[in-house]
Length: 491
Image (cartoon, rainbow, N blue to C red; front, side, top):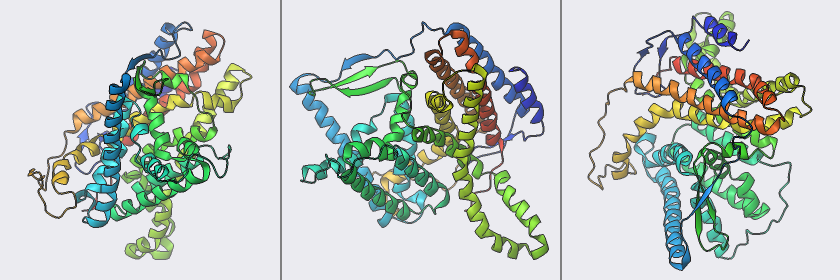
């Protein structure tokens, strides 16, 4: 039955496009060397073979808990002083970047690509730090600029250590999830003006102060501070972790097996599962929303339905339907996590029936949720790959002229107005490999979690059939969206 799935999906998708595009303005059409269904079949077959190999090779005696080896980063008064100085410099640097993003948003030019605030927040912080965290661990926890501001206010006499109101257990991670939705909403649907980004950062800072004062800094930064929650989850992929030494006079660096922290921990609340699912669904929708197919889904059907009203006056029809289109776009973002969560819940429900286990569906949903994180991570990389490469080209010019005033502080050469498009062949195959690797890691993590949950190895293997089917579907969806033609970016 499993082997039939990729073949059936490949046959169904024979008519899908065979021209790949990357989601960035600087791109060129790329004719796939083989039909798209062949990629589907190859990826699905690879996942199934990987599943079989993992089931055969990885047994119960394999370690499911990451073995960490501590390395003292600093010991003794001198080492402690050095670490504190480095951390202080990094925290001040992070706070300075936040301040520069706000100041540039109001003072600099309005064009986002000529203002350093766009680069600082969306490229260096939102994308760059995310990918760096997966390699070197969650350094954001130590340099969080909002935590620095709260600590500074604490030192000035404001008490954020105690809660005026006990943080409600039912609230859990929903505040962080709402902020996550807001950030993606701003990225997709709000005009990319630096001043709007600066205003959003100021509002978020005020809310962080209010939440820390009301519920206590410890609770708010654990549950409500979105960026802290996000980087904490991404940091589970890293082979490095950090913790204070027991004597509180130094730091220890822990080297651990990468990926396996996803097996050691589990979401403590359903809201964190929704957060993880949104990591995947928001990136997928971000990619889909830019395609001609998604936009034509609205315009073609809306114009056909309203043709008796407007006749051949397409300009009037478009003018009248634009309001509905502006509603249509965010609805897709809001519905996307529920669609993905529904598919995931369905897979867990089938797993429960398949295994005839007494474990509840919600428990299974929480247990296996972190197997989605590697998939969400590689989706982010593949979606933003060309965009990230294009933005880094602008860094020298923005560093030498952060406000767009025509300065040349560091005497860097500015970027030419026109740049050659990227070579799409290597980019497309890199995206395919990344998506495939992400799902393979997800299969591996899910198998280790199953070994922890089910008493017998055979049960653990069989339990993964529904989840494997879901991951094959996710792979095909991701590859399909990457091939959809994009809407031309406005000048």
